Amino acid sequence: MKDGRTLVETLLQERDEMYLELSHLRKIDQGALDEAERKNDEYRTIIIEKDDTIKKLTDQLAWYRRKFWKPTSEKFIPSDPNQRKIDWDGLETLPEEQEEAEEASKEIITYERKKPKKNGKPVRVALPEGLRREVEVIEPEGIDENWIKIGQEITETLELKPGEMFVRQIVRPKYALNKQLQEAQEVADGTVAQENIKIALLPLLPIPRSNAGASLLAHILVSKYLYHLPFHRIIEMLKHSGVRLPASTVNGWFSASSDLLRALYHRLREIVLATDYIQVDESTVPVINDQKHQAAKAYLWAVRSVMENLVFFHYDKGSRAQKVVVDLLKDYQGAIQTDGYEAYSIYENKKGILLLACWAHARRKFTEALKEDKAKAGYALEQIGLIYAVEAMADDKQLDFDQRAAERARLAYPIMTAFEKWIYKEFANAIPNGRMYRALSYTYNIFHRLTRYHLDGRYNPDNNLVENAIRPLALGRKNFLFCGNHDAAENTAVMYSLMACCKASGVDPHAWLTDVLTRIPYYNADYSKDLAELLPHNWKASRNS
Figure (cartoon, rainbow, N blue to C red):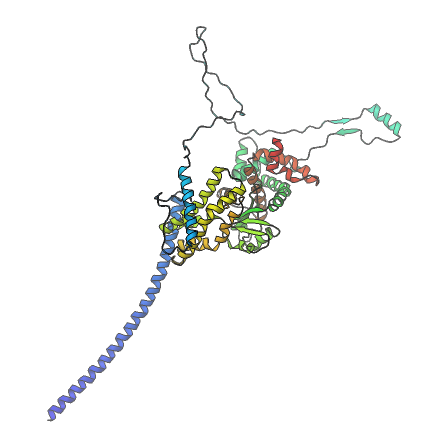
């Protein structure tokens, strides 16, 4: 009996020990489980962050590949020309709107298919008749009186002689009155003659007390701001003509020329800002920071009058802040066409201002999204292509401004109406922060500005004109690299403005600048003269009249 009780106590003790051990093991397992769960959460967070980083880097890589190794044209050509419309689920447009959009698309596509194709074969252009001909006659060997000339063959090649440096001598003969006449005049007047010596007045020179002629200054300025050569290269080129110029001298000539032309530049600004339709954009220009002793990114603002075909650049300490454009356009009244930069939004509700956007920028966003979502980005590009096809139709038909506006309202507006609703619907389904998401967001936020161009036939669907005017800045950055200080950047704005106006008006900038640098000292000395007469478009008109 006692042995049985001992056995039971032993078993109970073993059971208690096993229970305690089991409890201890359960605590260990629960701790390990909690630790594993915590680490799992950490790993999940790290994976999400890495996925976001991979997505961002993949987008950047796709953009760089297209930027540097693919054609940069933003025209979209669908892979299947017959697939002109994609029916997305949930395209909520009214039946009549959908019908109008389809009819407009059908008419545009039909016109494009029937339009005759241009012959793309290059044709050799004849050499200009105005060029001087140096005739070189090559007679065949063995010709005597038994041979009769029956004709000739002429082959023309273009040749070039490097520019010639020469010295302009201004000779002013000095004359004195005959001595007998001087004595007779003194006896008759009873006074001593004050003007017994005569000499012609020295013409006003572009830079006083300088031996730089107008044509040399024009050559230096055109070389830098049209052909983007830094001053040190220009100086080396002039050495080949036997002229050695210190860099400080050339820099001084540049500053003095800029000061001379500054009044003309301000007159250009007045004319541009007095028009009722302008395009505005901004671009970077490196400027040396005196405190940091390195180049800092600064901005030049470009303003173009579309109808007058004039453009000027504005520099305000290199700032891109909203206050710059507010001060620049504070008195402006009319239409302003820009990209989607938020600084321009302040003009959305300003009285007398109509804010227009740029379809080319919207198209660019969807072009970048092609790698991410080819189907939907392709559809968006196709719709934008139809909008531009309306412009091509109007160009082919040579429509005036009123007719162009009516054509846009009839064909482009229905397409834009359906496109806007598609964007709104697809935005909810786009991957956040993806390229397609950004393209949809960008376009939808400024869609009201994008569609306003149909209100007036003068308005362009994009601001490519002002972007083209800015392109020389990019070439300048690659060549002369930077501006030495804020004053040099302001002078650069003056020169780029005048060169851009020459290009827009089809004027030879060297001939124009040579003449203007010769005449402008007289305009600056006489405020009754209007400096607008010297602007390239007026200068060209006066030469042709």
